[in-house]
Image (tube, rainbow, N blue to C red; front, side):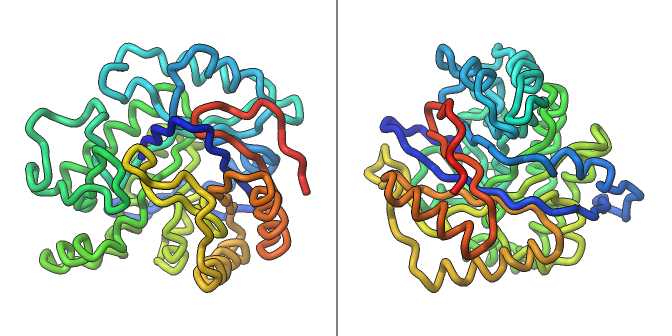
Length: 335
């Protein structure tokens, strides 16, 4: 999902660090790859930032370089139509070679939407629309322009994602940040899977296993963080191919694309929904997994509430606050 917000929107992010014990399952057979060797890449993350818009604006990359975040999640600018010329690799290498909070080097993950086809990406072809090709489904249910759900089990879509991952590896990213894994929950996706004799939840877990295996054939230390779909913790083999989870809106959410009248944040999540996802995230932690939390809190009072509530109820250390269009240069105060 490419966020195109005009107003400054602050998000709170949190992380919990844990030891990882992973191995990779390829699309056809179990791999002998073991992630224990790259656990140390994540153990020192204290502050992180998530910026997937305005990367081509003057001074944006420099602000990331000058920041002291330990981990940056950013988009691949050259994957956007009209920006194919952009030297993303140079941006990534500049950031990776800059100082983090402990005077070490930053890690840089690339945002990738694996559950939706995005009209503004270079892979999108003229004439594509819902049903053409057949694996493109209905537009984003929250009203985000130019985003379309996909039958992610389609061979053509998998090949597009693998080609994208290959370019991400070539640009020097340390890993990928997978968005829209919760695509499997949509009724139309589940029905489409049933008509093909498939189980959508099992297919999304298998899809992640497959692209993770592919990525680590290119770079054995490649990191994989999945956003949302916390219930996949119960899927066989899933935890063995992801380094952790990033969970959005435990406490506060937005209400769709602001360009279409949606709210950027401060929408309170029902208490029962918060409790439900917290219970699942605790199971991730109990299994030794890294947990991130992304909160859509605009007002300072609500941001402070998120820091306190998350740290107290989930035992996740506050990591950082960020703006979707402007990086926050100062590291946040840990509460």
